[in-house]
Length: 183
Image 1 (cartoon, rainbow, N blue to C red):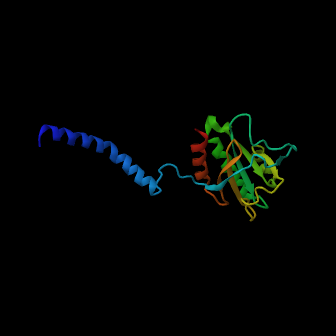
Image 2: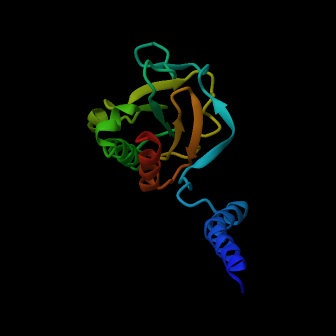
């Protein structure tokens, strides 16, 4: 092999070194493999905006989906009767917010449904904004059984991103919150 052909082969070799990883990534992406992008909640498809949905808060005001600064909302949807299991899940959801450290103010907590009757839950529920689903817009995602809670993660513009059905893994929710809120 003469010097000219050897230089061409070297150039082709260098090109392949850079092209093969790109080609491998394209093939893996086409096969559906997207590392680090898996969420623990179920995506809401087609996307739904709650910006115009009227949620009445305890003080009679309307919940502001669009806030003065970009903040997401974690909506807790309780079943007909929120008791021990429901309250435990609400506490874990609140703790997931706390793990965001200095970014926790970028996540608001909204509880929709009848609050727990046990007066011992008052300190926990004071950390949630209590709302009433006036139009029934959340009925599709609300658990039907007693003592269950589901959740929705709603973007600052009112667009619902993820649904966490009753019995969801709160640790998975925490991981999703850390990916989405810390950005």
